[in-house]
Length: 177
Image (cartoon, rainbow, N blue to C red; front, side, top):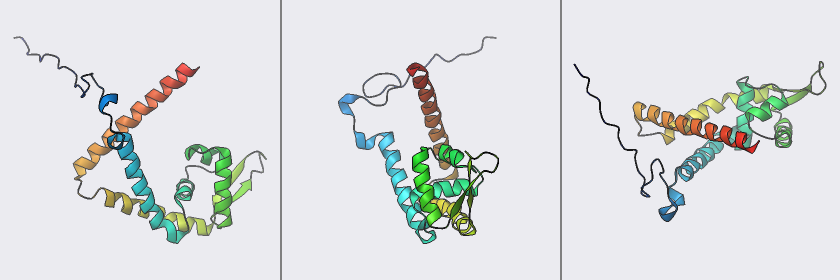
């Protein structure tokens, strides 16, 4: 008995008629690009998170490293800069502001003087404790009207875009060498 096979399907075509190309210069609308839409969403989420965390004395730039410290994702200035994707100078200025607010302290390692450890103060831990709840409220508000399945699909699509972005970055880094 022969098994039935389905013929290969033609790849989806864009308005330009090219396979796997969703945009073309002739009709490009920057405001409707996925990048622009994602940026608008991130801006809206950032504004709401800033509003939610203002009573804790945290800005958008400050809550990310505070959360990383609170969750134990970093313990040194170098680790924190890496996980927050900031250069050393930007991280130093940010930590200066957080220290001035009494949220963290830098402690030079006694084992290696080049290493600077960071720890949250009790006030910093209290402020950081509010971050996950604020993020949950803001993101849930932005996802109002989505079903659980739609939310899971959206996360899957975003992960695919991110995986492709990582692949492109790796290829570009290899080609730059």
